[in-house]
Length: 243
Image 1: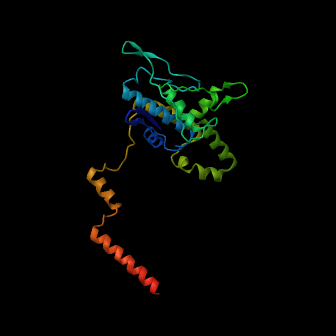
Image 2: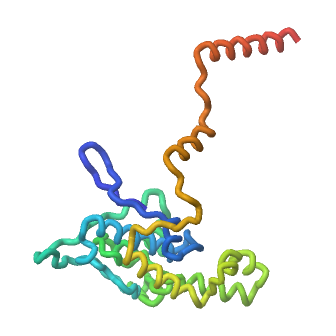
Image 3: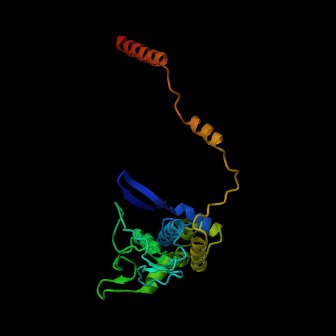
């Protein structure tokens, strides 16, 4: 997910956040689901506002409740300040109701960025009554739909459950603990939106990375070597014709 600004010289990436970064906040599984999309949106919002020095003035929705909200003006340095505004560009992503791209949008909106939108594409929106069921949306934000599926699968097909949620089981992540996991992750994102994933391996130097990249880089041939290769190919072709 990226925040892109348009300038005379071309588009520039102002800020970016990716699902794999959620591991730094305790989300190690289900990085492609709706709850992870929301958390990624929250991460980019808090990261961008921190970068702009607006994170304390525009806190957004600190405890996600699934209600439809838009970020409004707030007091900043003794003056009223309009919120940082961004528009959603879905690209080629699916845009049907409940799509994950709208999870990222909701996360960015709750994170304190003004992203103009309506509630019509969120899970829980009823096309007949034209109303949003906030409880359903909240359920998605905290991975409740995943927890429900885990419980159903565990009851109906234990073998499939063991296979599909193998990594969850190995890390002792149970269905009833998912909401707490996402709640803690949201709080950690707000506390430090630039946190990096801790690694037990020592950090590589520039020289080490350079040496690694050279291993996969083809050696550039000299002019003489190129001519020699051409002559060898010609000889091979002529020999094949004679046969």
